Image (cartoon, rainbow, N blue to C red):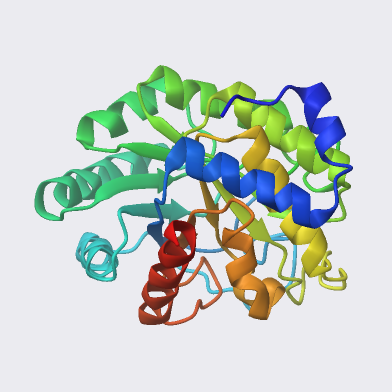
Length: 308
């Protein structure tokens, strides 16, 4: 299965949904096989973020009920990593709010990464905001395997979503993480008001960045944020987006994350017949997910569909 050019993607996007998703599933199985993977996160530091991302309840710019607390104790984070492993996750990510992890917090986070890497059989990831290559090298030396840093949306639409930092800063952060020898997990949010052109642009930028894993979130309009009144996307539009991401990025893990339960509802299985092959389990930053046991049973069903 070859990679499609941008011009070919422009032709494929005009296909009926059934044909588009069939091609996406063919690409997924050809390039990645019947692989279904889980990841999990911990909201290790919450709220009072200086950035104004219009979808986020943790932004200090908006009045929300989001929890606010400093960096969690190391034993809490290590315990969460063990729980994630026991639930079937292969990757565990430490997530902190803010533009970028404060210098005084880098040491404690590196120390807990080192402890997890040494004592828990799980790959350690982190999402700590905008950092430089020196910080990434320190984290990699501690045992970090992958850095998570979403681009959120297309370069063109980004100014409609965030004004306190630039799209270029996010791309530069990904480049710094790659330069330090880390894998990179980066994706975005579907349903911010962007067009299909924006989704294709985002997927193409992620391809140019050489990311290793792509999480797709679906906007949950949360009270207090500027996007609280956003209309949900039709399921067919979501499935088209998943299929296009798979066709543009045939060799990477394509994970469904926040919003998959509420936005896809009874249509979660079709998303995995449209090219997705992983999920975040155990909940999200400020929202609960469904019980991990249900997700594990669902994964077995999907594997059966892929191989039947």
